[in-house]
Figure 1: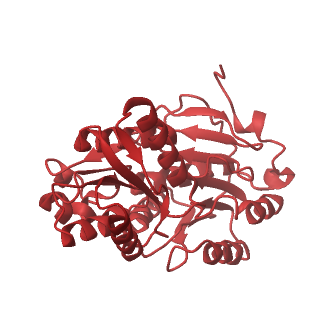
Figure 2: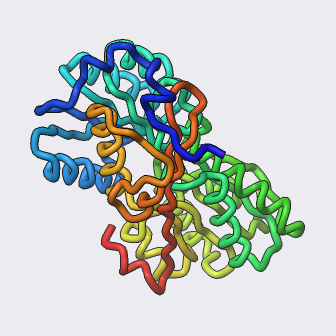
Length: 332
């Protein structure tokens, strides 16, 4: 068991130029997200801004494409690297696609932190809100509870390149196969490309193909919005279960109507804050240790292990659930 890991011990060889980025004033950390127009990343920008305000001498900002598109995000990262920056915090639309550009960032002496990218090799730290397979299984347990543990169900992902979404879908499928033999997975991993209208149209297609379907599990934060709209239009509220990842405020009207039984999530604001916290720790050559407290609930006793490359994988325990009874407790 790894009891204590530090960046200096595991990732010192990641980039030789990091020594030039010593603890200093006017550090510039840029967070690159999948889609700046999505509520999830609007909320994340609050955490990015809050970190900058709490740390004088650190300039933080959030950038990204206007729509969830892997190629557009890649261009944003390249454009950002052309500026004078000290660190990149990236939430990849497609983790495999950004490996090359993040590798070049490391070679240039830029600190790289990622989120929702546990397989990323060209990162110094990937920070996850929780174990993704366990989160997928948890969402599936909630779906099974709504479905009575039987019937046809399907899963959605933002894209097949969105690593965490695929991990949740796979974790859900494995959980159902193990615990709910009367649940039948059909047409899994429908891609919505983080677009509620696309999710809506895909849901309508699935309802036509499988008129007896009983459950939908969304991966992107907007999937449940599109699916629920299709369910309401078809007059299937109370007959088909819809749940998955989502933000309470966005999902409120569907939670109230019963079209969505519940959502599971983590606070994007907290994720934005801790990504920037991790970047500053690396810039300042501070140790990153198993069990450390990053000062944010859910990340107050993180598990640190070796990542797939030369960096570290840092995992919190930050998932939350909301339904009709408690969604007002979360103002986002």
